[in-house]
Image (cartoon, rainbow, N blue to C red; front, side):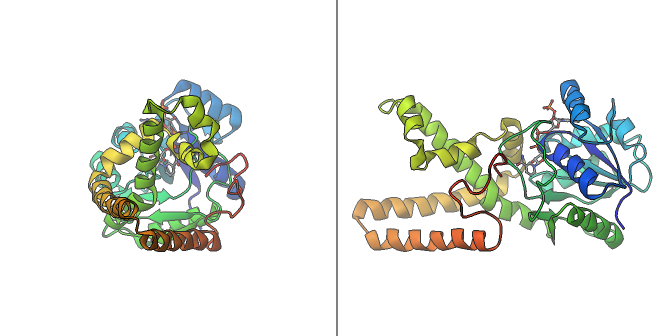
Length: 303
Ligand code: NAP
């Protein structure tokens, strides 16, 4: 048994995908939703992202057993304050934010005494907004739940069952460990992609049209990540600052080592390093977290 009614606050890529996935995978569960943006609410109603799109966050949560905040991490606290007066007594509050320690703290401050169980489905694309969501986003992807100390095991189990019903594999993790792991697997790669694409566009002796024309050399794959939502990623870096800076320090040291290997002509070091990283790619494919096809098997749904 999972929750019978779910309210989704924020109806962009993640909120829309949760809504569509619930409607498809848990058709008996009632869904309501709210987004701060009027045009997004209109689009959500047209696409049927949730059963009922409400005109306020309070209206959306009034009957909910589970409330999921799907807003940028910097907006979690203010979004939670909007529902404080309308939240039913036994409701479980969760979210999909990409960083967990800051979000957990902000939700707890905004909703003191409430049952808060943060989560992060590690699934997404570089697209955003109410047109971007799709029901299969969470299939075969991991959802990391970070229950705070003393969380009710029965409610944690219900949240876990909910995500499994949407097709996800669930893992429990401490929030601080989550932030460290995601800093290296997601946040740092985004920072690197944003940097490379910015560097290429600032070059004076290589033209923009050359960068685009010859992008299949590797640059193209970075541009997909660097096209991700600026609001979301600004908030992620500010909220997971310590872990990102820690990983960035290690990355800089490793980059310096490769820089030196190139300068001194140490081909052996370069070869060993590249052979090791190639094996990691193979493991990701073997574990079903990506596709070996040249377009990564993504079709229209780049993940
Ligand atoms: P999105 O497509 O931009 O959707 C977020 C929506 O929330 C926007 O429509 C936004 O409206 C709305 N919003 C902002 N403040 C609000 C408030 N106070 N009340 C109600 N609605 C509000 O972003 P997303 O990609 O779905 O990301 C949502 C969350 O999922 C973020 O916390 C992100 O870290 C997490 N996440 C994202 C991914 C990914 O790949 N994108 C993956 C996993 C987790 P406005 O546009 O008007 O601000």
